Length: 258
Image 1 (cartoon, rainbow, N blue to C red):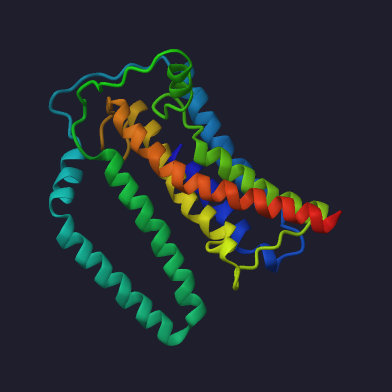
Image 2: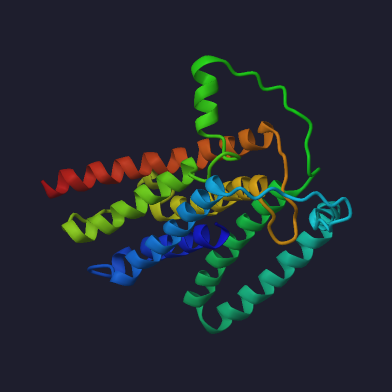
């Protein structure tokens, strides 16, 4: 699951970044996306049909203790990470500005994913029940987007929609116009907002992963719905901006084309 969602994010971001550099995307792009998404689906199906029951060991090591210690020392850790990253960027920029910007994008992606990882993994292994008491259609909708139950998050679906439209744009020869200079409507571009959303997509996947199994020595959790709701709040902003930009760009592309 973890590897699959990362393959989807990396290959999808490559599609977004190289849109103006290729006439038609290579077949390896489709293969990589297919493999990543296939791994996600396969992991979910295997989990659903699995009859494995966790054997409880009171003394089994749980690296969540290490995560909680990192949270307590986060200010010192943040200073070190910012210092090392800034030094690496300055040295790289001295030799190659283009490479420095690529490195900055990589640092941003890794940084957001790490922050999300710590946010999801920190705290108690078994949390107190929440006070959420949804009823009727609201309850059903909340269950549909409860990432403790499935990995098919809103950000993943929207990400695949945007990346898929970029691929189809090249195949059907319907170009997207993503000019950002001087127009307040494009205060942020679609590739940039989708890039940020891809990191949120990975973070959302961590919710499903840790509530259904161990990862990196961190034992399976029983988290309440409040943490999922916090992820949803972040999705409202990130996915909302991305969806709006995507709709505008697609409509504009069809108007210009036809």
